[in-house]
Length: 294
Image (cartoon, rainbow, N blue to C red):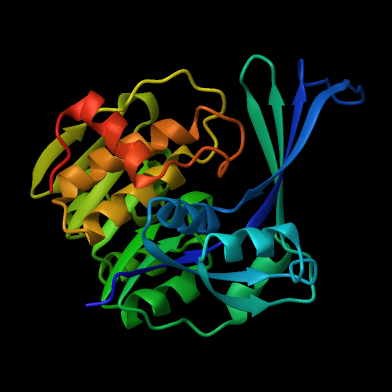
């Protein structure tokens, strides 16, 4: 069986601005800091897997500004395999405005991401859908040997019928409570109905950790660190989970690995700036949870 973990979804350029406070309408405020980082949920996960020593593939949409870019070189250096839909637009771009108090507002330029809606769904043995177009993801799930779904912020664009079809064709659902609320509102199902509709589900809960549902219910605590930026914590969790699961870990232990990897990601600003190697993860895992399973 192949060790390849395919991830499909967004590749994005992240611009993070820091201000002391948000201005009222019609006023302005001084920007304290401005940074540009590599981002996009699917790309973050694929890079996280590669950093952990796993074999990852990123299936995404890129724009005219990607060839020859620092981002392209970054992925090649990490040996992330790539399969891209090309667009005449620019790459998807996120503009995040943070306050010194820790609040965040995000504006998203779809750009090349619109290519998913007109692209053919790939066929892969093991694939995670990191948000994205609903119809495209339905095709991915139907084509896959194993399919995991993280609907992300795009879930608000999914219809009742699309969500129900995805639930029927995935092996694992990963989301947070906010996204679970939206899916419940859209489908008319309760949280428990949604969880019961899929073989396994992981609900992430920020500082409260995560909960694994697979018939039984298992609580996975978060690994507490001094956080500088929560952006990308969920993507790092998924990178750890899938890398460990592909190594043969029990799903609960894989979730614990995810919690450890997530703790690294939040220690520095930027979604890909502080992702650990497997050995770095192992040291922190053993400090938090005891001996790493073999």
